[in-house]
Length: 83
Image (cartoon, rainbow, N blue to C red; front, top):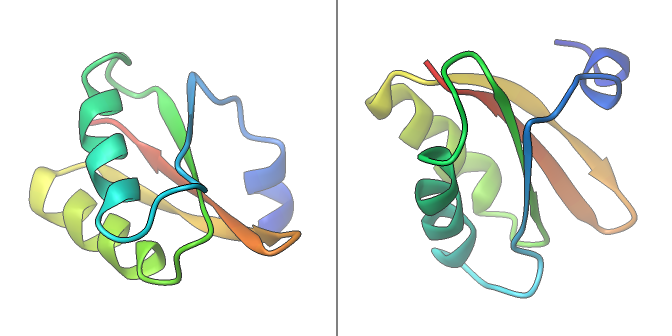
């Protein structure tokens, strides 16, 4: 997805993990994924650079669809779709 598409995607759940360092954001995402439905989009907010690598790898292992990320004001909004 393009940056514009990501900014306008309907998010079912937003996880604010900006106050945690690796692997905090990934652990928060793992907890939150069970609270949304199949095909719902989850947004993970993180200031940790490693999250941009960790979330796509985790999505690949779990079968979820990694949609991309947007960098905004010193942090990242990472999007994934539950499969």
